[in-house]
Image (tube, rainbow, N blue to C red; front, side):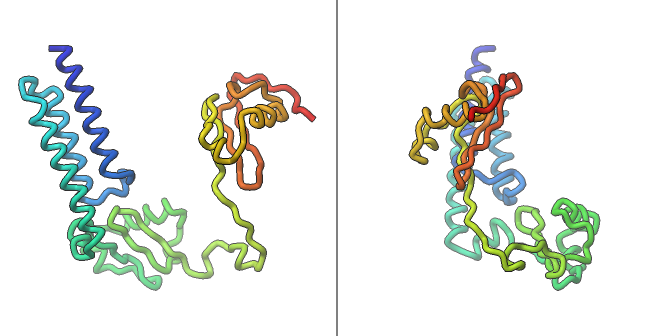
Length: 234
């Protein structure tokens, strides 16, 4: 019985993991009500087949999980094609602050109190509600905030300064292992990487916790705690 439980656990774990991967990459906080219900049902079905009823055939759990995944994908596809269906499945965003005024009627409709609103504003780094021009409660429960013009951070464009393109740095080393795909994409090789590491006083790749190359060609390196660093090469 112990081995049966072990095998069922492994199979159900892989099935649930595959199901979640198929449904998409949204974070838990970004799930719609429908996505959340599907995720809970899949977890419950997995737990039921995994151990609650050992004499229950495995397919009786796998078939409903597959059906839920298919239903989720089907409704997601329909939501992409129809605004009406998207409104039914995901709901619609709600404006809770408009032109600096709190919309009390909308708060009551959402059963969303002032403590909730102030708390989410603080999470966005806004301590004074008087600084907010518009705030929208998204379908995921996240609060989108637009500050009043006088309270927005100053940008380089506001100062009339030239703006240089700044892309995403490319990771090259993870925990002592080279990301060869990224290295090849940059048309670089391991010898170049080793040379750059030695310039920073490191013996080799195994001593590096993380390394990345930015769009200006500057290599950022964070060595492991146990790494012995030599004086940087000239």
